[in-house]
Length: 193
Length: 326
Image 1 (cartoon, each protein chain N blue to C red):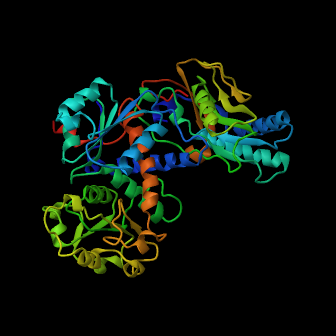
Image 2 (cartoon, rainbow over the protein chains, first blue to last red):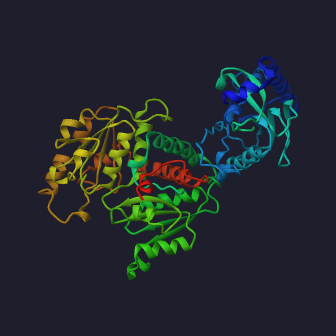
Image 3 (cartoon, rainbow over the protein chains, first blue to last red):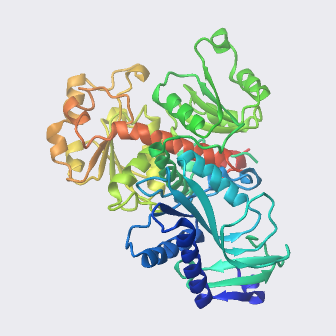
């Protein structure tokens, strides 16, 4: 994110908040799945992948199954509905765990839920990879303004926003720090997530 | 605004690495139960082949179909071209049918460039081999194969081929593959040496970004990949070497020569192979020969090229000189 936006941005979640939120979501997943026996976590690049890995680590702690929660990534670039509005973009990595997703409970993990279009693309992508028992969605922030009938099963924080605002998630693995920033869409083009 | 892929020389290092990285990701599709992506749904790709080809045409067709594009195959044999239709009229026909991309192979060097700059068609033009000029997707798939084998651990995503020593052996004069490879490999930082009999080295080769040698044994001991070129007898209308046996002995790759290559070095061949001529059956069938793997990689590379040219509202690669020179 550019300097302009971060100057005006206000932090709504800090590192300890994010850690607590992820721990709670992990507990909710275990509760709803009655254990986490058939759970597969798939993060949506870029930041969803890091969140999925963190969630997997917590699930392993809670259920006492070190290294046994499959975690992967699902790139949705080729399934986007706005591909033709911009130049073709570089692909991110899709990594499906070795045992596949057939008959499993797939939990998609993303940083921000906004229009819902990313999740629609992810559902299409999943359909080409296998047939999960069920698909659920975990997001760190739900900022509203859905454009499709999609909702999250696990939400870190509901963040009512206006369309003029931007929500930016920073994670240590990618950005060097953990935080969620709420800014104003300025003269600089923000990615609007 | 449409961009084309006419020459490997038009690609910058970043363009080339982007294509290789995209191909690396698309190659994983081959392991999935459904080997198809919806990305180019509703787009039409025309394979316009004025010259015989099996692997390149099938490879482009498979690539376009895996991206859900509609594919129209056009071969000069059995079409109006055999009745004397010009390239222009053929192009106008394709344009009228709404081709989003034209993949063209032509026996005349420069035909794809003409098609791209003439204004006859609006779609993207991809050069699938023109005369003795260029064959950029072949060079890309060769570079992709090299990167996978020579990058140490992993497939080498994001890397180029800096410092790798590549030897290209054989009929350089008639080889569009050699020309494209020399340009692309130099762009990617590799050190390229061409080895050929003096009669099969093209005029003006001094200006190419590579070394020239007439002695295969002198360079084979310190090379990371050896690319054997097919002796193109169909393009030879003069005697370029005394006998096939002499050519095979001096410039062919046999088991003895292969044993003198460094242990990690690979043997490449763009196909089709003349066994017994530039490569012996022993080498062609050894596990150091990547010829079959190159064919598989070709589909991934062509998917990457079609995706990057057609997937968005404008091309992501090849800010080509052909448009600037208009």
